[in-house]
Image (cartoon, rainbow, N blue to C red; front, side, top):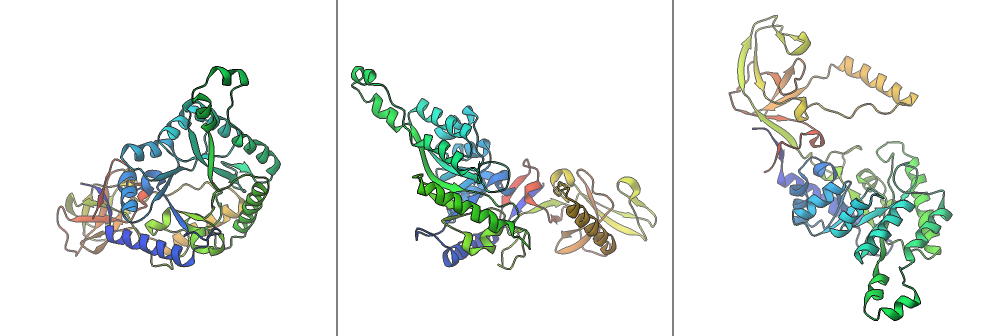
Length: 397
């Protein structure tokens, strides 16, 4: 049976390292401890949304963040009661209702989102907790940093309470009006998101940070409470101590799978496991796999393993950057890979075994010539947990 293995001790180690960095080197403008917001989007970065969230909570992380309504609701349905922030701003009324009624902190990044939130707050006679989202150059969710006056005008609506007229007040001597006054939006945080923090030579993050701080100061000067401030993702948290503010959002760092050099002793989390299904010996000159892409050079003993790209093995993000400089980087990288002849390997009984031929949808062939390998032996694949099919069991060991 296939499963995604999660080493409990290694994951505990990573959580401890990140908490220590936050405690020793965190900077909080209000002198409170640096808040770690654990991002558990994408099925908990592939580790299993509910399992992973509970593991984080059990190890002292008390604030989670997600990217979809479905993720937020699934956590609540699983009985998780800790704070949850919905990172994506939405103006869809049904979504805001679901979030509000499940005590999820929403993100507000537009006039439409704010108006929808106020409408829902009034409809259910409740105060909705929210974080403001500022777009400092990412071009996605959030109020644009260069339209501060417009942002202020929109946000001032959040301080208005729904009121009945004088006639209604005289006719209704009960608590109705008091409830209406409570129907509002409570801003408890403000955040933005870096677009290039993982780059080695990253000047744009400093620009984004300065834009964010400029917006925060402008809002505060005009009476808007901005609450907890956070802009750092995993890469920025580890690279830029001065940008940590009141909170940081940590996702990939917990998995030890960084886009920057890992100088922190973080351990890789999440490996795909399968088992040897068959063993056979092929004579010299025998083709292996689709397109006859590999031909044996001598008698070769192979293990056939029921695991392939449909399970997430050797899957990567597509090339979706089309600037001239990016195209040049792709070409250079491909040339280097060609001359390096980078082979793929799996691990069987602690032994590295070369993958032969093209990877199939659900099968891989590995060279086990001269190695001690038997039917049903465990096979370990180095994968990105994010790409492992969600139907595959997550096994915490």
